[in-house]
Length: 193
Image 1 (cartoon, one colour):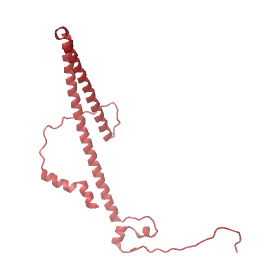
Image 2 (spheres, rainbow, N blue to C red; image 1 turned 180 degrees about the vertical axis):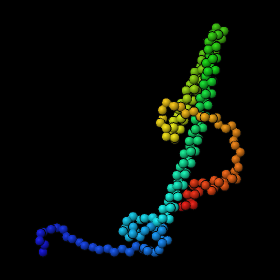
Image 3 (cartoon, rainbow, N blue to C red; image 1 turned 60 degrees about the vertical axis):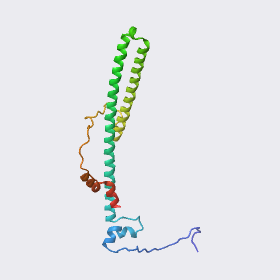
Image 4 (cartoon, rainbow, N blue to C red; image 1 turned 45 degrees about the horizontal axis):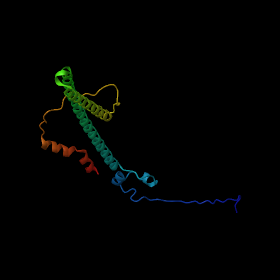
């Protein structure tokens, strides 16, 4: 006997939950998180210990990413230095080929046209190698600028400050190995997981 006709009917329910191991002690709560969050049916929470481990894993991941960035910047920096040195060497070769070509052109009657044409061809090949080396310098500089978050072109040129070290330094491999095993981010991360 409804006062008004309706196609809906009401339903009332009650639910009581008792989480497994709720109130099982301080150590359980420290690992699994507070019981109040688990009893409300909310998302699974993490206790203090799990959060600390996750924080250490995040710090190790950051160290690893930073180490890789520094390695990449170091490698691209020296690639840029090598590309600039190659470009400078190609400039010297081109300038020498141009001098030879002009000297030969001045003695055209004595040398003949074929030899002068060959000298000109050598100069033009050297010029194309200079342009290729310059393109390599620009490409490597752009890669370095991307790595260190500089704009691709800001009117400045990145030049290497010092030439590469000609001989490798003396390295104490035993102490390097011990330090690497102790502070290597990959190994630290593996211990934490």
